[in-house]
Image (cartoon, rainbow over all chains, first blue to last red; front, side, top):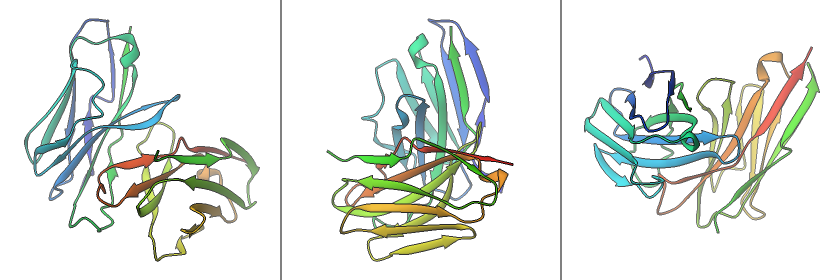
Length: 117
Length: 113
């Protein structure tokens, strides 16, 4: 398996533009996570999907952020309009959640480094 | 408030030496604790996962320990190699929210030749 695939790897855009980040989870996984990582705050969970359904989006910073998972093999994170403070590395991770108590190992993609000028 | 604190923030050691990274948490009720390794420009990779009943877990030269009573964990790296240079992140999850992981800010390790 190729692992979790994210695209693009790098994105540079101007303030006010729409940005779309893409993620292909590992085949067979039923849970998908979007994280944001900055030097100051470390890794923060933005949203969590289980079986393609958003379970918890309380980490999404503002209405400018939205995420979709139209099927088990694809998810997007969209920022519209983008702002300089959105600059960060965005990670997608997937896992197979067998139960509440299972260890549910998360596998991370390589991330998308976003710079908003 | 659920928190995970790691120390030191950064560490520089010579190749071949051992080192120990610390993680203290206040997450309750505790479900499991993970250590991740994150190379520069890459996503985190799981090293070990420990539940309440596990005191130690090894993965090659990496050995994690857990003291659930004092809510402390450590990651010991034996005979360090240049490739161990990375950030090491401690992550704790609580029962009733195993999808919600509380991340530490990591320890940045640099191994010098």
